[in-house]
Length: 536
Image (cartoon, rainbow, N blue to C red):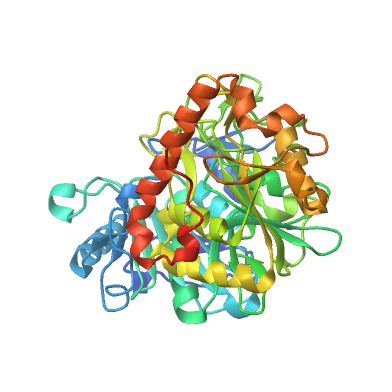
């Protein structure tokens, strides 16, 4: 087994104990070297800014229905089994593990040691074993990079083999692609898909199980930033709702853009060492921090380049889920280390394809719990395989695809923390206004930023009760005035110019909320149920 290493001592590592033999191992290579390997082997192209752009192949988004968890003594009685957390038995895993490691034997591989969690006492040491060099770049960018020559014991391993294809008829799974988590062996195997997001979401799923169960820490699918007064804001939301964009603000220090923990000492800590931003319609004017982070070392996915290597950020011919990953320090204004204090404001972000919800509204404790458990948004095109246009969706805790435990476990932890901290909670609609998708238009980013800034600065708290309007269907407190936002924008009903159509759609959506929540009613108390919208 040949090892190529950045380490001056040419550190010898072996993958034999994984069942991988006779391979050339590229260990902890620099991104510059990985760039060269990608270009030399026609696995990517350099843009006019010398940024590597690659195509992830058939899969340009996650495939949540092909994600499995091994059902064993650790998981059997704890995991919330169902369509989201699909069980497989140990024999199925062992068979696919044997096949994928045999497939990788004798090949040139890319191995990296890194870790998750900026909180030292909660650190999770990782090893990634990748078939593609650009998958290794993604791991370098997205996980936390250890100090040079730092040695540590590996706890979890991720094996990624995009070209390995399963045989559903004999392998016991539904399709040729898969991602399977084994908590007993502390291994994730990913096959048949080159979409890099599967790597980071696999580890996120691991932390979403281990942190609550083992350490009483709340894992959250959220971004976070910190103000000049050390005030922390966190932003919950699924892909495409604006977590990365809204938390990346030149006036505040970025803690992280997607995954965080909230520990018993009221500290917020980032799970990752990088950012994974959507770049469709990206512009230097609207999102300068993200735009300027696309520089050598970053990894662009599924974008279109012209003959001169210029990226067309408006082109969605491959997918609407065009992406870039980059180390967090590519953002100028970040928190070092990636830790924050007890949150002052929590924002629930939703991209409401119906154009019904107010652009911002303040939630009472009952509504906060209800909307967290509901996790309403719209799946946006391209973020998942098979999603070609926005689909109204409820995703518990704003992250059900990554939550192995029952949603009420996370909800109870959040409710307790919200009560203890006295945090302000806001529901923000980054979706449609003036009508539903196809009729209305997407909320302007400058208005959403202005509303969030007013909430964080306390301006919206200064608004007296007479300047709040109680939404007649959802009972939400929506401000009538907000600095730098036209008053007409604050009322979704007014933007429609048709009350009958608006209320018909609003009551339809409220019915969907209530129908969705029925599966949680038996574990929700009267205070949580009081946060429900009205039925006509």
